[in-house]
Amino acid sequence: MRELERRFEDLIALFELAQEAGDEESKREAAAEFEAVEAALGEFELRQLMSGEHDLGGAFLTIHAGAGGTEACDWAEMLLRMYQRYIERAGMVSELVDIQEAEEAGVRSATLRVEGDYAYGYLQNERGVHRLVRISPFDSSARRHTSFASIDVVPDVEEDVGIEVNEADLKIITTRSGGKGGQNVNKVETAVLMTHLPSGITVRCSAERSQHKNRATALRILKAKLYQIEQDKKRSAMEQQYGEKGEIAFGSQIRSYVFQPYQLVKDHRTDCETSNIQDVMDGNLAAFIAAKLRS
Image (cartoon, rainbow, N blue to C red; front, side, top):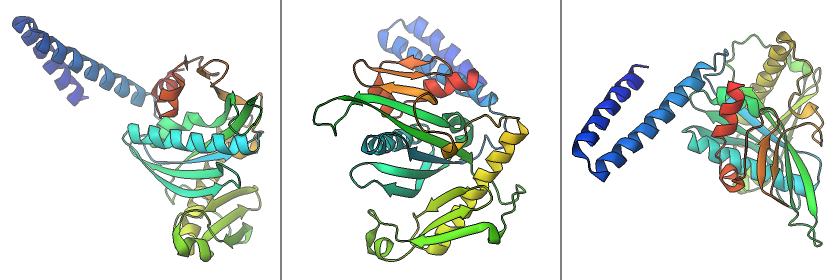
């Protein structure tokens, strides 16, 4: 807060100097600083809206391809790139902890671990189904297709959040990671597929070359998902869609991305929209995230 006050005081001084100087360069400098301070104030306002217990910390973001076959897998890969770009633009860092590539194109699922101030606070409202409408690049008749993918976001919780997982409740399968991970990743069973039998939640981790490390990360994600379910219950939000349990299909989307016959990205919860789809796919999600936080 003190830093914002200092910048505001400096801005007033800069405007006074620009007025005295009267030249275009001074005016441009003052205008640029005004925009920067305005953006910083907006960021400060948003952070005041994030008061949840884990909003300040990191997050796990998982993408699942839904209805639509190869189209949906390609869409899931496009979303993966979009969120990686958003995370980078927001000054955060992401690590790909698992990816399952589809046979023909795209990915069936992918999980990112996101670190940075307020990572979970910003990303938590991205949970839900994302719908794409476009002319299919996989259709020789160039017909319009609708594809779906779901986004699940859970906080990267500490070990002491009170979630206990009984070893007997876990079904663990080890597999080869596959994909572009080098010889060790492809030939040794380092990937871990962990299923929590009481809840039916399945987590996969394949990023590390060590099976032990992948197991530890998978358990961490599982605990985060179980913790999120408990939080949803406490908020009497059982009707709220949770991750892959909801149907990833028409009628349940939170946001639509229309490439053809017109260009529009619209969030159905806030009515925030833009026709600049390329900017959105390059990771500019700030307007959508801010609109949901303020709603």
